[in-house]
Image (cartoon, rainbow, N blue to C red; front, side, top):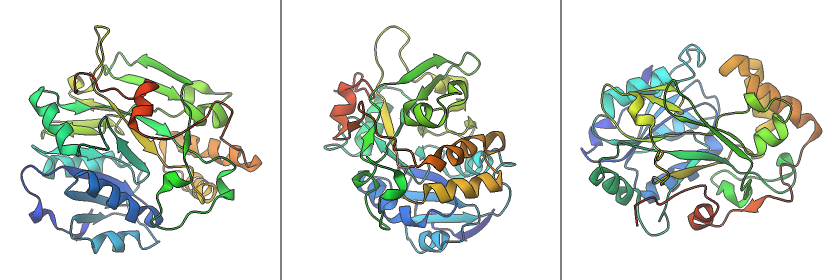
Amino acid sequence: MKSISDNTAQINHDDILVFMTMRNEKPRLAYFLDYYRKIGVRHFLVVDNGSEDGGAEYLAAQPDVSVWMTRASYRDSRFGMDWINWLLRRYGRGHWCLTVDPDEFLVYPHLDTRPLRALTDWLDSSAVRSFSAMLLDMYPKGTVEAQSYEEGQNPFEIAAWFDPANYAIRKNHEYGNLWIQGGPRARVFFRDDAENAPALNKIPLVKWERWYAYASSTHMLLPRSLNTVYAEDGGEKVAGCLLHAKFLPGFAEKSAEEMRRGEHYSDSQEYRAYHSGLQDSPDLWCEHSREYKDWRQLEDLGLISRGNWA
């Protein structure tokens, strides 16, 4: 990786940090930065994997962003996790670190009245080192490509709907994490192959130490104790959601490109399913879809939890 903008000297000892890999995501970046700045993120550490749309240059001009560039294989870097683990090890120690994609937006209990710092302070006081957030796929009503998205726009003005149920959960006994599948991707793109539907379980927010590492995306960590983000005694632990703004205009073109590149997991099997499914211009909306309102709605549906955080 080559540094193209290093502002890490500005990082204070207690800053909340975001870590991210990206490729050709410029239309999303202005809203992404604004969203996370507003909830209290102080610095962004980004690996750009050969963007050609000006996104890397846009980020390099931001005073609270540090950017590294690489054109190496995303697949051969364990789908970007080798790059992110290196940055986390070097810059994340002692910080609450949020590792997300450019289309993932953290929602947590009390989001509307409390900054992210309030959550991490409570986690610190409770000796909790990691925080889970299920990936909640958001989608428009009507076909994806029939919509119109402007650069910097709030994506959830378009992708405002989600599946309130339709989720399967099981325990991964090797790593101790929960494995969650379902939602519109399982319902539409993997309806005949549910076992291979994308995983929705994420542990994106961690109080980092140098000996920690993500083992597979942000689905699971080492040491394994960091994966116990759920109560095993019948109670609840605090948990959030990552609103996933994947289904925006341009998704079909991006899916075709990623299928050609073959840089994603299992020879881009997921993007092959998208490319095939998009040929019929599907509408992901169904009669059971819910329009997103706020975190309280997600709590009522059992998708996030306050746990003991009153």
